[in-house]
Length: 355
Ligand code: GDD
Ligand code: MG
Image (cartoon, rainbow, N blue to C red; front, side, top):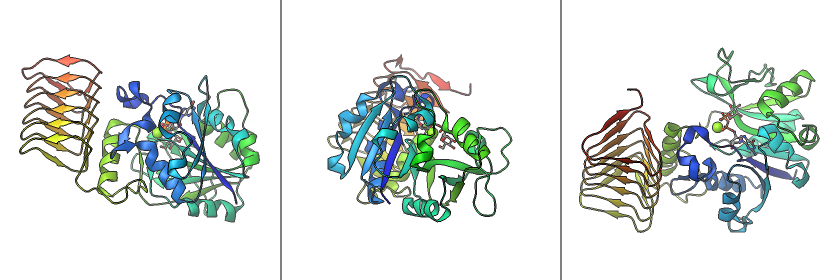
């Protein structure tokens, strides 16, 4: 069975603003490399080599970085939507690039340990039109809720519903029979979750579920993003892009750590960063060129490229945009986001998003 992979990477990554103002979500660095590198490495490890990226928002960034994909052992193609076509429209839009009868579709923000070969086996054994990778989560309301019957057959698809009938959700990876993919209407916006899947179920198509309990995380929010990066660094989340788990810290080329500075909890320190005396970075992602002052504490946060955190500042569960300056002794907590280039003065400004 020849399988093409399709990656949906056209979303705006709104929940990760301001980080996604300068880079599309799948290109944000996680454990030292653009997130997509981890996904591509797992696709390659499963033996799939032809990958089509459905892009829209900041489309050019992907090709600039990954090129033809040959350095990853892949053949990459890019299909740009001038106007975003939605998830279903994005899938339909790449139909003429497919080479085989089976396409494996991926949301571009999922960190997962699922055995892709096993998902394909389920699809083949059930002779399904579409097979969905499903996982169980604590709060299914933020996802597509997908109940199945005793044979694993999907009985409904309820995107972001307030009263989900089960904790089993769409994990953002589908196998499509090519003819079914081609039946999605072309040239207009289509949501695969709200239109295609419910339509297929209503028409009696065979939609199969593949339930899996391995590592799974959608990196769409700042909290999930920092956790995903730390889990990758520590080897809790699988990636074929990291030869071995890095452990408690990834410190990239040219970063300078002064005396007493500590990096723990799977944190990544980007290239050329500077950490002052006794600075503490725990479970955070620090982009290239950022400066963390003496005695500053940065926990579970993202520090944008070339941002500066002043001496003695405390940054917990926050997102600091590229080039922003957080003055000495400021305290930022609980989901605060500082926009790129903003300067917060020295002297103990305290912000909590809950306040
Ligand atoms: N090409 C293209 N065009 N891609 C798009 C578009 C578009 O118009 N809109 C969104 N995407 C891509 C995003 O870049 C992302 O990789 C993927 O589609 C899913 O979009 P998200 O914005 O991350 O959706 P979500 O997380 O709220 O929900 C989706 O994923 C959940 C699993 O994480 C849904 O598929 C849910 O049903 C699912 O449970
Ligand atoms: Mg998502």
